[in-house]
Length: 235
Image (cartoon, rainbow, N blue to C red; front, side, top):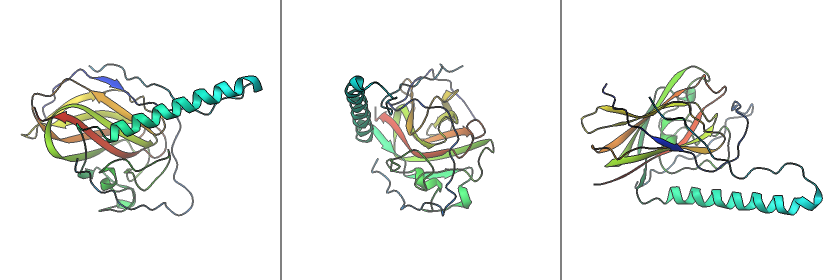
């Protein structure tokens, strides 16, 4: 497999900074979901930026100011989510396969690879059948392979992590001859419900194929991916 190193710049969209912790499945019956409809659409250290979070206890006279700041941050985060979903240069996956799936899920079953196709539909951090996850937790190397509606000269890949965030170790795009090109490899800084956003120079080739590799033993518990967006242009 041919690998071309492309020096990326990473940013993550705004979300609260939290302590890294495992994501557990509910002890009750697994959460079910309807399947998504596919949309008609050496590395630099990663970084992440905080936004809205529940304010810490504060004196009564400071409460109003703290609440206002939190609301403004939450509004900014919501606007960013909307901007990503509506990005005219972005595409959501239409097909997906994976190294494994929870309960050997297939087709549109909860936690199947197909749950990572289409636009994001997990609204809260935590275990959710509307995202993909592997057969076992903390097992080591797992991957998610995605195809998109049209080939583009890629400039960015955005991975929406929704449970056990921070376990991604590599992102590759494939040229039209099937050759793999690593656009990022390193430590994933993502926390909570957030995007790992990998930017890189426009590829000289066109691609409609992305592979996301995780080391599930890095972040304890279940590591789930809600959606993956490929960003690029026709020329």
